[in-house]
Image (cartoon, rainbow, N blue to C red; front, side, top):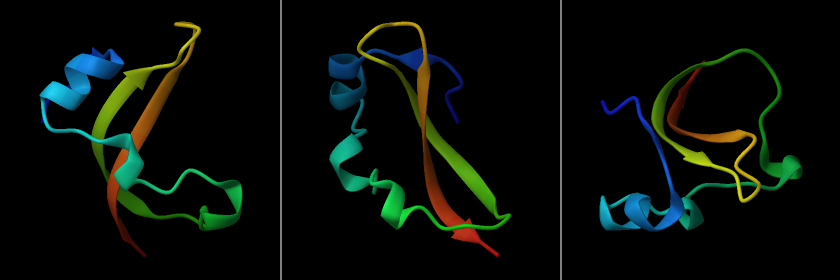
Length: 58
């Protein structure tokens, strides 16, 4: 797994598509889960990192 934080367009070119991940807080499951980090993107402001996880394993 790549551990570098990507910018938006390089992430798309690498095959990562944020649209494939739920982002609304209503869709975020509550609880503690083991999950696999898919990729990370810099936010638009460049001050924070958005993490996208693949799978949820209770």
